[in-house]
Length: 582
Image 1 (cartoon, rainbow, N blue to C red):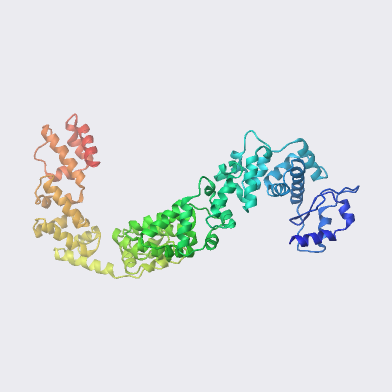
Image 2: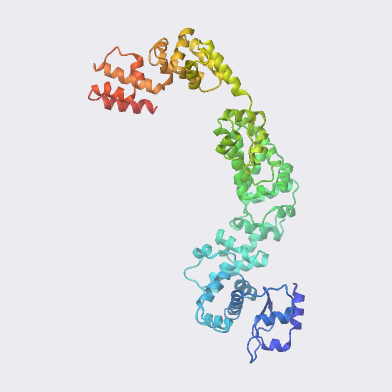
């Protein structure tokens, strides 16, 4: 409703009604109309708000009735306005804004006042004898909540008029076009701005105008970045403007890209743009990036973007690939995108995919991976009905199959690859070649003990033969201890090397004690070191077999050998700490 229409409404009001109305503000719905002459006197009671609404808008059914609580608060605000303007001599616009945009203060005021039939008169009488802390209502009207401004209240002042610099700089901002209800953010983050001497703040605002910025641009940006008003002109901010302008972005376009709901860290943003620049992006490409993806400007997005870049660099992505990613960035928040990447990495790591394979996936499919959120690993493993190795193979063959595994989707079993059947056939053939009788109890026990693919059995068998053992001896070893083939080829080789070079036993000792390969190297070293010490003390049989020393349980070893020397348990514990913690 424009001002002319408001005046037309007021002209239609009956003169008799005007003579009876004592309120200087008439409220219709949620709108307030100010009468030029603030006081009318009469002998009859004040006309109620419901009658006023009917006189002004007739039978308009679209205006809902005002609740009693809202009416009380409106009348309290009216009384507060009169107090601030007439009694405390605030400028009318200041008094109006403070009374209208401090609902918490007004509610608390109503709780303190003994209300009679006339709410406005009750409030006026209360304020006459109970001065209020004007900084509370002032800060709330600036957009701060009580919990935000409580620590900002001056300890020795109650009246705003006693802080002339605060009001001076407040009015400079008002006159410049900065919204009053957004100044609270500036006060909270850059309080010193309201302490500037006369004329200083205006000069700082003018300094940015000299760069070619409009007052609307400056008013918008200082609310989101109050630090621009502290000290000299912000160099990082100026460099960013120059860079974007060189790239073809006019200031009017940049102003439109800035959000009223975001904050900006110009130093971090400049670092991000410089990073792109070092990767080969010119000013035009950077301006195009900002124009297409304005969310990059936001402080939280810059933080996330820098973390995302670091994350991708660890997987071997180049800066050119990362810059290309940002130009093609999907319609998801950068924080969510980074979270999806991390979630996918954890999933691939939990299914034991090799690091270089994970890196290859992240380098080739970053946009695809960051655009969706996978289900949890345990859920996928149970619903896909497949082992980790099989899932890894499927992903490597076709990474986009993970689109079917996102949260909220129905998971289908992976098709049978036939690998399990082939592996079982290879295991059977391997054991038959070693002399096992097919379907015998001995063979069933061996198949049950062995874990892994059939193709791995021959590789591990050959490893033992290459180490210097006779093929027939290895066959007998496996019949006695088939579990030794559960270990990878590299582990078997390492244990044999340790047996020969560290413990000093010949490789042939494995024929008599093949189970050695099932124990850890720390166990063997601890037992033999302790045995050698006891042998030096003359407390044990110097001809004990290798299998006796390593193969018995800890309890047996302690009770039959270690305790034979008074210091035996102490030496045992010291050796255990030294060897097992290495």
